[in-house]
Structures are given as structure tokens and as C-alpha cells.
Image (cartoon, rainbow, N blue to C red; front, side, top):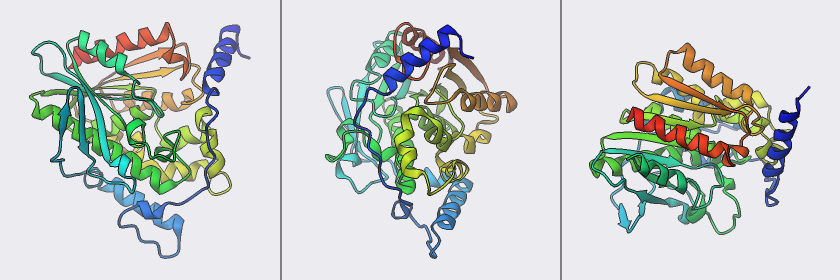
Length: 338
């Protein structure tokens, strides 16, 4: 039975999580047309399973790319073309805000906000990083703010009941983030890190696992499997409604394993990448059982890390006083490890 504090926190969390009224239940689609090189042979399930197995086995190739040649910095706004193009023109230009620290230290972080963050999301975190002497490059992820196709009100195409498009969008996010690291390295920054929140945390981990330039990471809300969060999380119940009747939680976990941290944990063994793992005790979007799986895996594999568990939920982490505790912990971690 929940105690008084837990009931109060759950009510607060539920209120924040259900304020949006523009969530759309979209039809299920295997999305094989988003998976390059996939072989159909009349069996959609088998095609996706084979594609995922092959991609995980050769993930260096899956997340490889050609560095953009069209970086343009106008004031603080950096743009470049995504090496992994989608069929939506607006989404293929990557938008970033550059927050250079006012010192000569060569420390920089790519910042990846949460799903459906607007253009101001995590700007305050970037400014706080500057106070710690750390430069920040805040990236808009696929289908967010300036990258959103005109028919959308939310960034639905990066997490949806279209299996293939979700894989493509998250793959694109990983590649775009690495392009941001490329640009920072070209500016002379050689102590590089990543900071991701919620969906951004998943992308940040995969980047860290595949890019040896990353020396420190902040994973703000953690889960082992992309599919588990979508299936069980409060914020994605409209996505699950589109999936129901077509597959099970276990199948979804397998189909989206290619965009899940669990598939790449072993790649971190032997790497000197110190990670801050942040999770919240009353999270109804990233259920704590899945966050504990990540913490357990880091312990089991003896990966360098710190754990911060806060007595709030997913949305309430963005409220006072929790956002101040979290913000300072993230900045201190990166200051210490970059």
C-alpha cells in the first residue's frame, strides 16, 4: 500500500503527464520501407527479426555515416544535413544551439532533450553547464521543433506504432549526435561528453557505446529496452494502443532491441566512460523496474558510474526542487569527468 507521500507524488505525476490533449493513436505498421536492405519474402515478422539481428551484430556499420559538408553557424544557431535522410524535408536539416563556455577549456557536451521538447527544452541546462566551464551543443532530435513536418503537432514519428520508422528515426538521432561531436571536435574541443534525458538518454547511451571520443555521459532517466518503456509507460499508452493486437511486449522488445541500450552494454566494458545514471522512484513513464535493470547491468559489468535516485517521477523531475538537484548533479558529474 502506497504511503501518503507516494500517493501525493503519483497524483502530481499523473496530472503533469495527462495535460497534453493532442496525443494521437496511429495505426500499426511494420514500416519495412524504412529499413534499408530488408528482405521481405512475404513474412513481415521474420523480415524485421532478421534486420534487427544483422544490424545489432554489425552495429558499427549500422550507425556509420559520412560526415556532413554543410555545417553553418549563424550566431548561436548551427545547422547541417543529416547523413541519414528521411522522406520529410524539414526533418533532414539538423538544428542545434551552440552555448560556448567563456574560458579556454576544451570540454564540450552534446545535449539531447526529452521526447517532445520544444526549442527551449534544456536551454537552462546548457547555460548551467557554461557556468561550470563546459560548452554545450543542444541538438533538436528528429521530428522535433524546426524538424517537425507540418502535419504533426507532436514528435510522433520518432516514437510510434510504425516499427520501421521508429528504428529509422532513432538511428538518425544517433548519427546526428555523432555529427555534432564531429563539429565540436573540429572547433578544437577534445574532451567530449553527452547528456540525454528520457528518449535523449537512450540515444546518448548508444552514442557513447559507439563513439570512443565520448569520455563522460549523463543518462537522465534510464531503461534497458526501448520497447518496455513504450509498452508499460504512462506517456506512451496511445502508442501502445496502436500496437495492441499486433504483437506482444516481448516481441516489441525484440523488434526495437536495435535501438535499446541493452544491446550495447557489453561495448562499454573496458572503456573509461563514467556515466551518471539518474532514475526516479515514482516514475510512471520509465517504470523503476526497468531503471533498476540498467543499474544492475552497470554493476555486473563493472562499468564506471554513479547513481542518483530522486524521490519524484518522470515529469516531476522537471519541477522544483528536483530539477535543481538534478541539474547540479549532472553538471558536477561532467565537470569532474571531462
